[in-house]
Length: 68
Image (cartoon, rainbow, N blue to C red; front, side):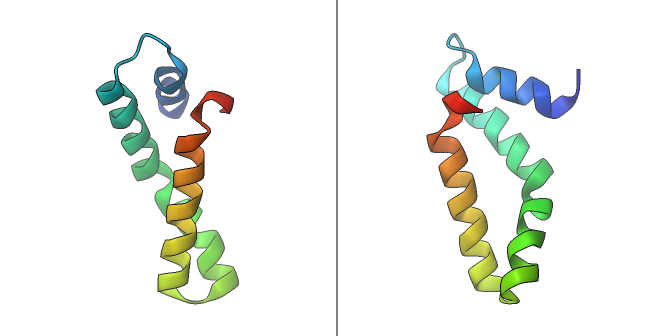
């Protein structure tokens, strides 16, 4: 199974501990952070605004984990 799919399964597992979920989410952020950041940096052209957009994106993902 693809690594990121395994992490999503951990996030959606009702039996997973908070620590396991946080670790899975951290691994997803590490894997996809650069790709996610490339989109707003291309549109905004500003590092700080791009970083804010990435933070908001990952925050929204964390808050909506059940719908992944």
